[in-house]
Picture: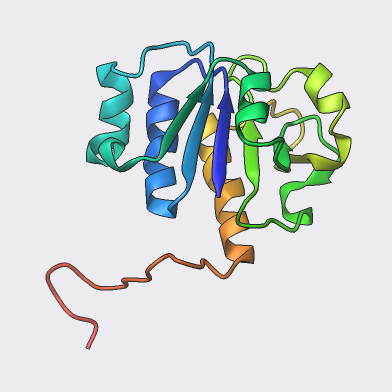
Length: 163
């Protein structure tokens, strides 16, 4: 799976998303401009010691991202979508796009991709969820649909045993 952050602004969120991507064996794609530098201590602190294991790709623009990935299927997570994130059949090669924290994905991009826009249902007037939480929700639904292929289920206690 591939997670794409379009112009992320908050290093802690991107660090958390990076950590989730490592745990889920997903690649992280960042589209500039970024609201921080990739060597900031905040991004690495949120990503803990997992950041070094992250499959990270950085692009100069949305167009650059599309071209370098041969115009892939992009599922767009937005509060403006008509479909729920669980209404889509995900594949291992999908790219799931999330917009910047302050504004989301531009409507000019959404309008041309209506069938690939999904939302996380929320109560009444809630505007949005935290970016890293939204990524985790959608990514793990995509992985669940693939029976968590390639992910190891450990299920072991650290100091005691289940038996």
